[in-house]
Length: 458
Image (cartoon, rainbow, N blue to C red; front, side, top):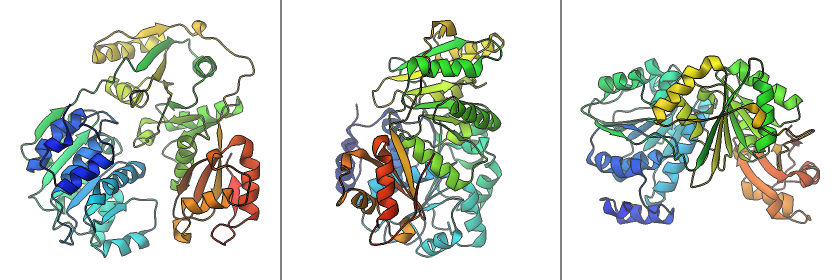
């Protein structure tokens, strides 16, 4: 148990870390931060939720020169969702450093506002490779003053085909820099890219297995053609309020979500064919508890951060045991109990054996006949999402929406859930019994003195 106060950080940064209730360093923080603070390159493997974002953010902020108006750090992430999360963490940790300018550069958003923000020379840029490269090629992003490059979840960026973009970005930055490479899994390609872009990096491996005491992991051997039926039985037996279901192919995600929907479950699919606004909408509904089941591929789910995820279900096993461990590590976090359920046929026994070898322990295998089915069972989410056609660009804030719903009405604030604001849209979760009343208030009333259209998402 190592305290952050043991690090050579400024009193202001330490005080802010304490105010964020970071008690002691996680394993990845304790092992990597001393190296990061010396300016040495780092190759680190750490599971999701390990605290790696705070590790590299603290390192970047420690040596930031806010009076020098240049981009001093670039963080590349595989998805917009992860980039947004990383930016939020940076902003929280940077509260103690006045005038720190942090910019997020991701695709799926118009270039205009990004161009205007780049004119102010952000100190830290967090972005996806495609959009970052586009700004570099246009000359709107300049990296001549760069001190630190961070590749976050590098394995997923390589899986998504970003290798060439990353190398082109690196060609446009100073050779003298610190390069921090973080990866949840450790395929051969990670070592290859490290050899190409890093100089004698410290190599840190934090235990990638999850706390088996917190995650109840059960495998079910199924007959051919019984996969979907067994999944429904699992949902009826365990009744998880929120489940992340993994498929290996995006077409399977769409078909399974539709099949579950037809059987009375509120299921949404997350895959690569979605437009950005559709992806935002799906993630909002799942994270605010107005959808019970999210069906996703590994790549699409990367960067997904959902609090209190009760169950991870492997509709299909991953061929990579390390990916399997990464999947199930999304449940059972922050000391809470989690459920990891996996389906496999006899022909897939080799995959189960590979998982057992990787985690160095046998798995529990049950027959689907041990599950209790419930007739006419429905897993209805507690919340409903209302969509409003106004967002940041309309100066709409979460407090404005909450005020519109509760001021001069009989709706109690405790029945209003998470509020998400985007550039041109806002979403508010409300408890199911008051959804109709809340929608009427938003449709007939005003927000900040203005009329906005509102609708209920399915």
